[in-house]
Image (cartoon, rainbow, N blue to C red; front, side, top):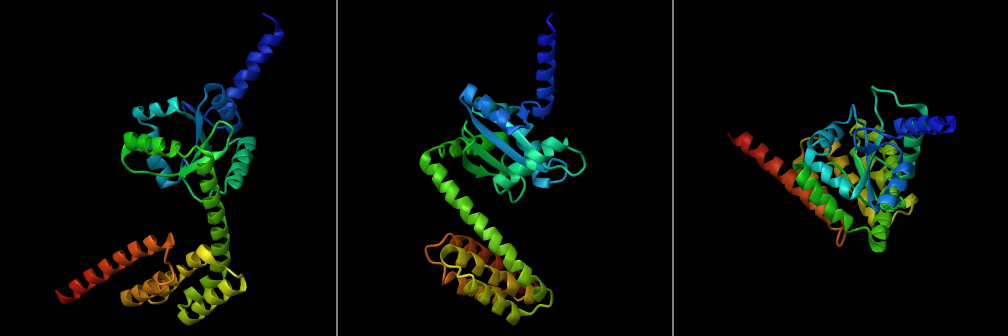
Length: 267
């Protein structure tokens, strides 16, 4: 047998050891793109903290490890991008994973991205309860977003979330010392000044205004009426906004907690 053939086999085996993770899962996105293009499939990428992230572990156990989930391989090349704490990744793999997390602005785990065969993201999701059958239906619905319009909509949402995250981080650095002291007035002033100085408008401004709810909740713990009041004030500025439903749901929960507390006092 020619030595060049043996060298090629050794190279292939080395390549597989670098790119193969759990059975059926790759760990190298570039390899996955080549496979997806050859097999005319999409790509499912699981950004996970496999040995410490509770929701990641649940998703793997409840969905990915179940035999029914093998159905997903008909439509997706599966990729695991891991950020473990107990086990050590090869330096090259760790560097690749870190670069991918930065590229796709991964903010938490698990984050599931769906990509077309060229590696363009068209949907994002995470943990979903209900087991493998329910998750497969969820993925089937998301696959419908693999259109030019779907990709544009996701890109716009991710861009908004990246800006929101950067602003929230900057705001938190200023608010946290005041919240530790329960300085409600000072925190409110800092929030208003932050929004004004940075000329934050539109949906981003409404998103930051939700911090008022956190401020009141932390500075007046147990004061449900104060929290409800500030929610109503923010709601008044949130017409035709995605913030609206989120705040309405929060208000319902706070009212329920208040009513339960009142019942306990009267018993």
